[in-house]
Length: 247
Image 1: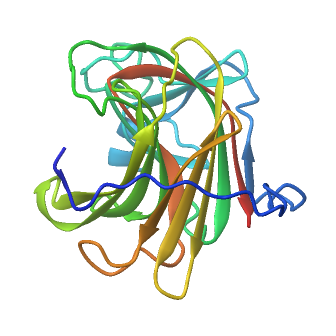
Image 2: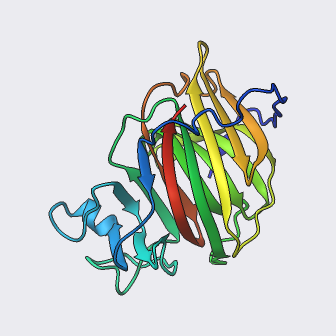
């Protein structure tokens, strides 16, 4: 991954206001992964419309999403291209999943997750679990790292043009954020447009870790609606709940 631009951690003072303004609003999406065990969807279904197993909620462009005991699961990570059922390979070492809905604008995204283990086929510092917000395409998005190998959290912006799958990443903010494997964590991401750009706040396990401002780094601010979703790199992970609420 190529990153550039200023890196800055920010803290937010306690204003006495409701720390969770979305708490009493009806969710736009509340995925609890209820249902029978098995494949939810995978990249094969995305690449072969009308074949494989599709999900009404999720599009997986890389990897495989399973349901196991009421949890979302990446399956055992590997680099094998999956077939219709992902029985012989998952390709979940590089996992990308976004919602079919593309109208998530000013929202709070809450993700209950567990990183089970890292796959040491890669030792990149940014390996881990990340959350997409304001996702327009693989080359135009905001992504929030919530659990990384190097125990950092970060907000990055990807713009069109560059050598990373046709785009370039810019780090908008980063901070320390230790994340234990085999433990449940809750990440809360608040993303909202401002008059000059986009603000992104990240809290993990009830602790506010950073605020990022996109006021035009690398290109126009990533304002307006988009998809949300999950990205992971060289980890096996579980998801207990994924909720999107207007803020």
